[in-house]
Image (tube, rainbow, N blue to C red; front, side, top):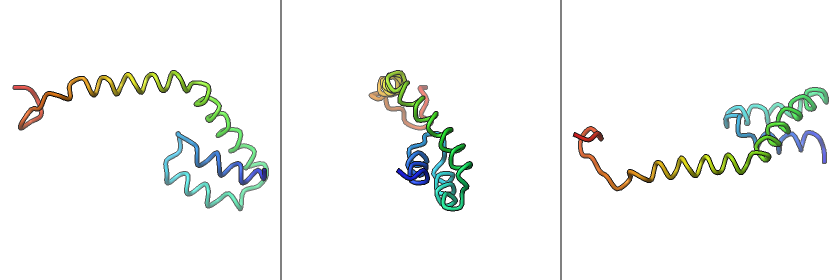
Length: 84
């Protein structure tokens, strides 16, 4: 696979970059030097490896957070949203 194509894939999959940052980087990929592609690619590959390596912990943490949010969902407060 072409390094620039692989870099675009890593950019699209990034969880750290904002959508605007992703679009900016993708626009600049064609003009990047091989060295710049390597540096950015290594950084984003490390991010991806971390996320995949910690997928279970991240998923469990997210599930616990959702459980906490759902716990008090049956209570409805009118007005300020706070109990009186």
